[in-house]
Image (cartoon, rainbow, N blue to C red; front, side, top):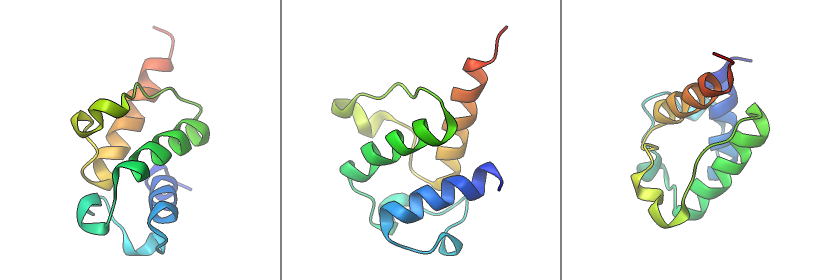
Length: 85
């Protein structure tokens, strides 16, 4: 399963939707994402990809998580930081 497919599955679970209804350009706010969904998604991403995402619940709106594609980029950046230099 590709990274995009894994992320779509995580997001779809939060929204109680089928992953096939989402793509990279799916707008999370339009899909019904709320602040608690963002927090739960961050935890799910950290667990699924074994990464650490710096997250401040008080500044959640500052995170670049407007679309599914934004989440893919966020995960890619977190994975890149884990690799030894």
